[in-house]
Length: 116
Length: 108
Image (cartoon, rainbow over all chains, first blue to last red; front, side, top):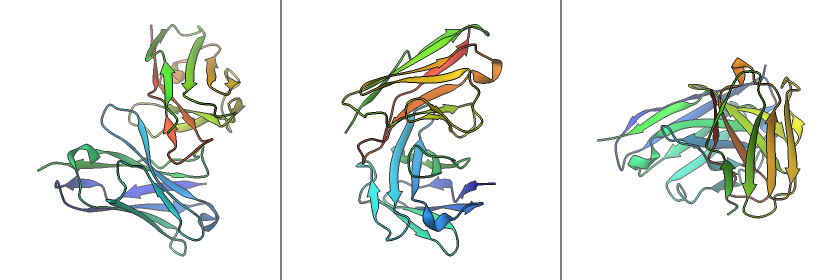
């Protein structure tokens, strides 16, 4: 079974940092690009980041560019998102999703709350 | 950036009736359009891609149509498990990948 499970969510302080992880299983992780998508409470879906399957090439949404860094460890079948300079509007459920788009499957998500 | 606009925001439908959801792109996305279904407290689930191709396990009552800038998701006879929020996603020209704002299909 193809499975993605996020972890690392919780309470972050404005200006602080958090690291999210996504554990993959059931497929050849090293051959798939991966993405992060987030959803603020009661709001829609926002794509935030992509990483290539091999050379680590990455893209970011303008809303997180320069603050968030996506990375992966193919040996551990793990995808990470380093979140720095957190802001209140980063509060959201963060999903990892297997690419290429249109995304299938998604993980169940992990909630990040940014508050002082 | 391609802007995706969904309508209506809320669709009230009785079980057994047909639901028609619309998604419009600010510029052509060809057929690179997907639909995702999201139920409360759950992750989104892919139900349609390539504008009209049903994802694995999706019932035939779901159908997609359109190309270019205008797309439609039709649910022919709504079942209780279909009441959810539906998002369209364009993947023709990115980054950024862009979603529509969603259509909530609720019980009338």
